[in-house]
Length: 163
Length: 137
Image (cartoon, rainbow over all chains, first blue to last red; front, side, top):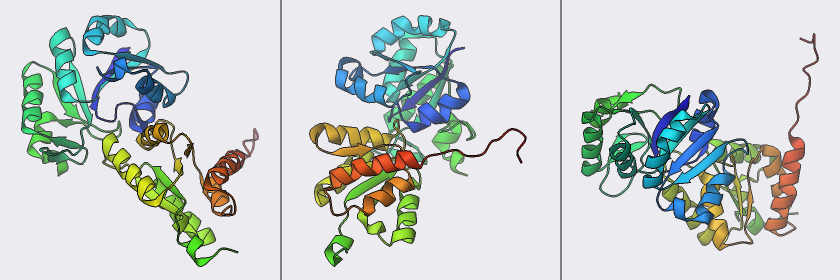
């Protein structure tokens, strides 16, 4: 059980997560890791309004999430952990050393980024960070929805995932 | 009776996943000829910031006060709520269906905000499940 999905998605909580992944994985809690959201009641309320009442949402800074990760992993229910960017997930991996798999779910266009998949755009330093995660033994793959084929990091970076 | 100018003035945004908005607006056009009441917006392949930017641009350039979206958790709804924070009088309707939009287009005689509230009730009332009798085919 515990956390079934560690996902990087710049939209954080949205339809693909709550419904697309939430239903098939039977997710009952979400850990949203974002230093800014964790200190803004308004942002937290915004994201809470987006989830069904039976789904629990925890808002943590990276440091808090690192401390609480073991507790989340012991939870008998299924959950997902979300970060809005690669840097945040990398910090969490470094602080905990306890994340085996990372899902790239949505990193969209921004100046300086190159398109790798329809929903993945990466800057050179972000590609480097993902390679470093993989070098640590973290399995990094891209998959926007459960029905899609997961694409290994190498396929993402070479653009082979578009073929 | 609607005037020419009314017929070409958008009164609301319809926003959602994939072709949700374009599809609903197309259906409204087919049924009423008034698809131009809505500005369709898709979140396909857009970041949350991009969705908000696109929505804000339409709201500001057209002076719109009503946004219809699909899922309460969708990024379009999130973007609309952020705009709503700056404009408390704006109306956001989530869970939009065709009945909602059809009702909205036929209430051009009242302010868009009131028409949206009325339309939300119509849309809710239109949702029904029938049949399912045990032993039925």
